[in-house]
Image (cartoon, rainbow, N blue to C red; front, side, top):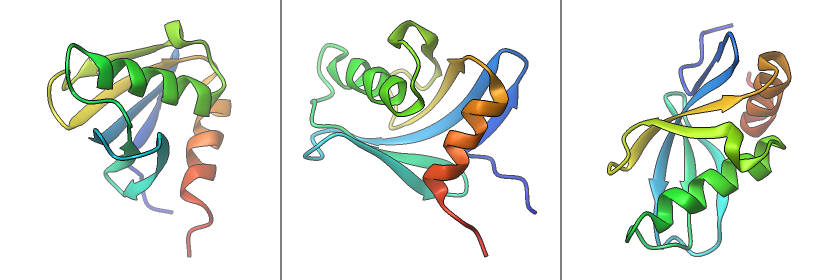
Length: 103
């Protein structure tokens, strides 16, 4: 099985890469490329609204509180790296489920 770079387990949780599309209709987090998840956000990239929406979406998807999700890189870019605090094995299983079965 090849190493996925869209997410990786870290000691205290999971690090993920996300490509964000602001003003993308409804909020959704799904499989993107092997390098990143794809997030569509209804919020505009104004005054941090899209970042706040992304944090809320990731927290809901992974079943963690919003305070457990932090943007560690790409604060003003479309490509972002986030850290999700929690049990890394459980979080990795959720990330893997988003991508579905791989052939």
